[in-house]
Image 1 (cartoon, one colour):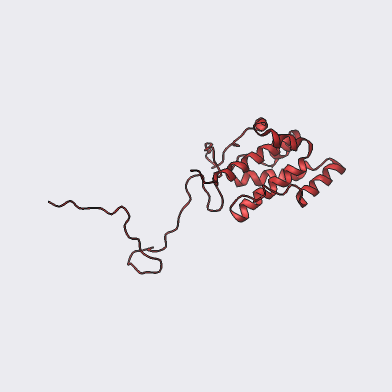
Image 2 (cartoon, rainbow, N blue to C red):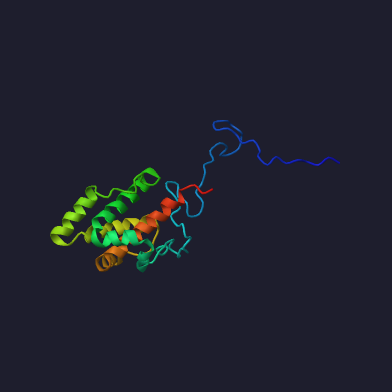
Length: 177
């Protein structure tokens, strides 16, 4: 009795061919859990999601010591970290891969934040919207009121927390061998 052999890699229909099967040739790759069609893994630490599909931050607000360099820069030059975070997140959204230079330290976002901080002490107001954009990108629970209180009360911690969240997505895109 001859054994039937199974081909582990069956021949797939080519696009544009009619194979009398509904949807033949129209298959598209779907992202896996945590992966997004444009960018990297937006939940690299697999933080559990709530019923609304939202989660907590990957690193706590007081976890800024996990990235002392960013925390120190954000204490003395918050405009620099704000500019980097904003350009890194926007680049991920628009291009689907990390910013080649790690974000713009001295771009227009940094300049505007720095001027408003120097003249009026209100640069943190820009960060409310940016923190909200970061939360939306990574499906992190919270709202505008919480964002406002966080950036006003602990600006360096908030900037570092956002930077670390973006960094997790960027690192998920680096091939591992």
